[in-house]
Amino acid sequence: MVRKSETEPLRLGVNIDHVATIRNARGGRHPDPLRAAHIAIAAGADGITAHLREDRRHIGDDDIARLKNELTRPLNLEMAATEEMLAIALRHVPNACCLVPEKREERTTEGGLDVAGTGDRLASVVQRLKAADIRVSLFVEPGARTIAASAAVGADIVELHTGTYCEHVLAGDVGAVSAERERLAAAAKQAHGLGLEVHAGHGLTYNTVAPIAAIPELVELNIGHFLIGEAIFGGLSDAVGQMRAKMLEARRKVSPVTVHESAT
Picture 1: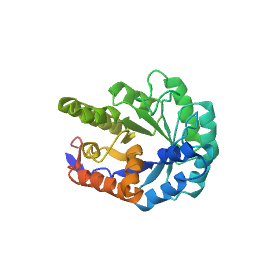
Picture 2: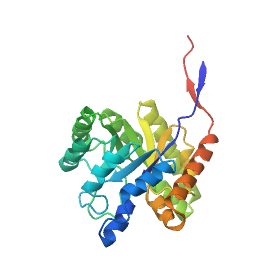
Picture 3: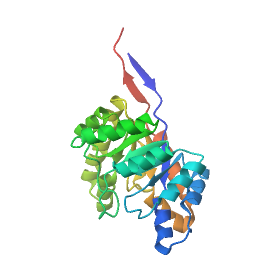
Picture 4: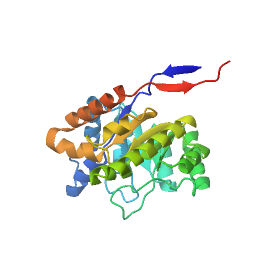
């Protein structure tokens, strides 16, 4: 028997890191990431993401405290799986923590976690966060081995890295774009089948979001740098509103998820 169910709803998480990047370039308090978070929420964001890096290059400790205390939507804290960051997360108890790889010399997060290679250490961090009632996401590449390892360490969520897909779009390599999009779709399907909630993000723009938003198992896209950049030209409310509209348009075109059940 075949039962048709509705496609998963699609949320938008807005990363406000680079509001803090602009603030820190001059010093002082302006522009304020918390104000940006409130504007994004008013424009339709379902949650706010902030990455507290070891070197505090953008978001700072005080930003996390203020976001947690004042937000009216869930806070997703991106962080490396270190004892320092674990202690901060356990002190503030955000709605979710997304564990990401972090290298001091990188400009932005480069690729996904090596979940299979660091499973025992990751599993310990995952369990300590979950014990504090914090949902745990792993930022990963869309590969079958990595998805299986993510489920094995006890993660609640995987966030699929869309950076490679976006790079292929920029390069105009149609074949590579198609292949990477299929890799993302297969990973989303596998993760969903393993009981993981599926998110995606990194590098998404107005021009690249639709094929990703159309993957039916996805429930959240996390987008930051592009939206903050667009806010310079038309305001953050407009940028968030346009992105939501493009996501929802792509999702409306998706056929309902089909679930196969054995006959009884």
